[in-house]
Length: 115
Image 1 (cartoon, rainbow, N blue to C red):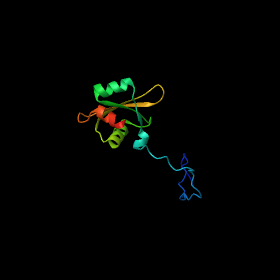
Image 2 (cartoon, rainbow, N blue to C red):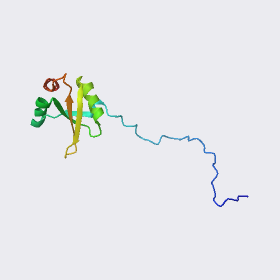
Image 3 (tube, helix red, strand yellow):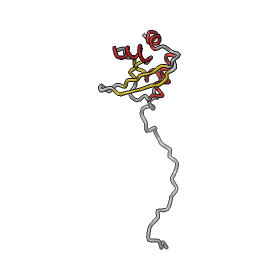
């Protein structure tokens, strides 16, 4: 005989899941690699001024990439050490990254090597 005013549902045995087929039709999308992160370098007049004056390279990058990923991708692709990364999302929806190089590297030399 149950003598409590609140009813507490008893825990019953739940069998382990044994699906007859896989529910996901497509495999999981791979994470961003260095080639997906950096799309292309920006070569506008203002970007060239940044290269000469501030030792900074300017790239258009994947919108989902964060600053740490951008820094690592630049290090892997161009074998240079980035001092810091600033990023912004442009009005057209693209993400622009300003990669400031450490004092050991010259942005003009690296830009010429990139093309």
